[in-house]
Image (spheres, one colour):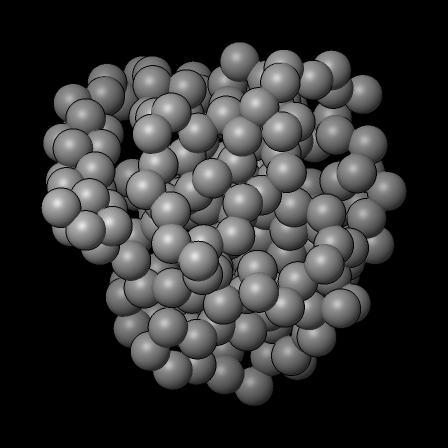
Length: 195
């Protein structure tokens, strides 16, 4: 089986697993992950934060987005501009977001673009990952393209029950140094202290 087929099989496995997670576990894990993230010194020190807007199956990032705005940080969220391509766009209020092409809340097309070099801290989604930050996304390549040009601090958000230690990798897959689950922070695969 080639890497693409391995990835597709793992995506099916994780989606089936995710579908069986209880609503309570999803809510509790989302709350714990957001609280851990807000305690990270790297997040607290960041002036410009890039964060995905969680969908129904993903981590609820609303507390993170609200905190970034309340703390006076420059908040950027993804805007899909072409197949496989997204740009960080600045928003000043969550009311600016509306459903985009994939039903994901996005900023308006005229929201100011922010260069990846100007992002201090990026909060990234995954379908699954390992504790070392090797991620598997949904297959569109959006975040791999972002990571190819991004050099700032970044963290992956993943529920502990969806972590998998065997992630098929291809040359274009970029690992992320920090992984945050409801249990806490992992740095290069090792549990790390927050704050």
